[in-house]
Image (tube, rainbow, N blue to C red):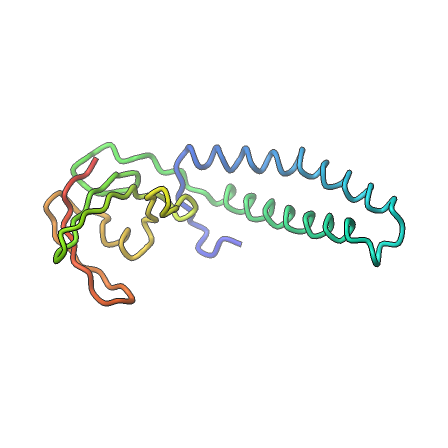
Length: 157
């Protein structure tokens, strides 16, 4: 399941995944089994929408369980950056775009935690990889579909 078998996550995300896995394996499986049993009691399974829906939910749940088990098995828990002068896993970074001067703030996280709505950037993404190891004041460029982008590291916390 995990392509590179080296999945980097924070302790918080690891604990969250373990909790979700436990919930799916116990509570959710029981709920789905009850739904299937009820749907079977309705009669003809070939034209039973409730049964088909419960089976699809069961398949999706089992797939999520398999994915979480694989991630938990291969996860490498990375501690947040203790040194605040170099960008690394867990760093909160303020960067300024070269030409426009607009700023963006991101927290570097593992790919399983990445969420742009929360400004959490994967350390494996093009921008995340370009940021790793940088220091305050460093200028850097990286390739995007729209061409090369230039930024400066303004702040690391």
